[in-house]
Length: 240
Image (cartoon, rainbow, N blue to C red; front, top):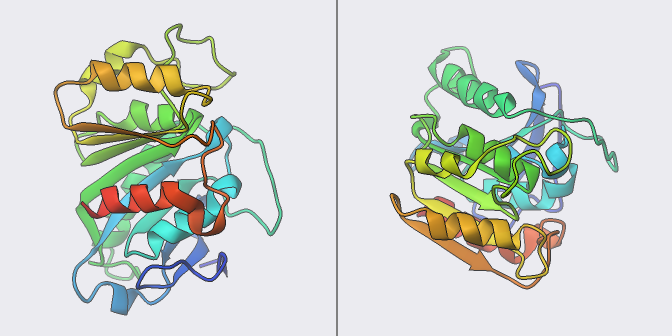
């Protein structure tokens, strides 16, 4: 561990979470229960890989949300180096960083000298993300190691490439490659991603899919205390 920080009070879950920068994965930020021994008494930690809004190479907008989820016994690996207090970076990320996170977690779980040796559930891996990060999750979802997909304030654009620079130029054909139960969390009709997300939801029929809307717009509730309502729904889904 290079650096670590507690976000808010470490979350409302049974295991207080901590945010860390790992020297073996400095390109990402890890959120995990601070007491791994206690958190893994009943079982290994499932893995959640997260992509940020605006394709940002930093999870600074989602710290409360990700810390809250981790406090319920998850290993969350977000794209981007750990932000310093108050730091807001707009550097861009790529979907391949999600695959990097999955590869790293599996390697750590198998490495006898790693603090995560035999503590991660490599058969339970989620890809998730917000806005552009949701598209990064969509791009990664076909990976056979993935067991659930959670798309937040996002949906595949009707005209690929018409979004902001750096967004994965996915077509609706990508939806047919999803092989896992999938959750869409949208911000209601005022969410710029609402129409695209609802269209995705209506097209997916090969796996269980749920859409949940809350009238909060595109920004969701990530920055609210403990990530707000979106964190409650996402955590419940991940636990399921």
